[in-house]
Amino acid sequence: MWELFLEDINEELGDLLKLEKRMINDLRLANTLQGMRREVILCTAGLCRFEQELKKELEYGKNEYGDQHINLYEKHRMRYLRIFEKYLLLKKSIHKRLPERKK
Image (cartoon, rainbow, N blue to C red; front, side, top):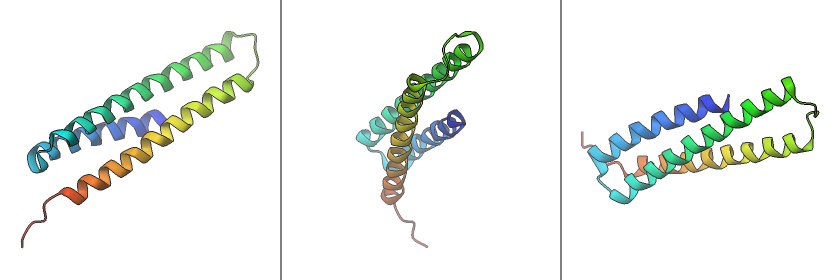
């Protein structure tokens, strides 16, 4: 489920990059958006690996679902939440920077 939200965030970051290029033209902001995209991709990859390892362990492993799995889950959850909060702040700051159109 997290992966789907991260995919949506990644797509919207692509749209925000296009918007930045057309209307804002700030190299620092463009670099921040690119960095955020990298962070989202790395988080998605980490979540996919975690999910694959968990499925493998549950199917073939001899160990029960325990503290180690819970700690890893919590680590990934916190990383996702940090990215989501950072994304919301970045999106808000971009919308504030858009030039207002005269009617």
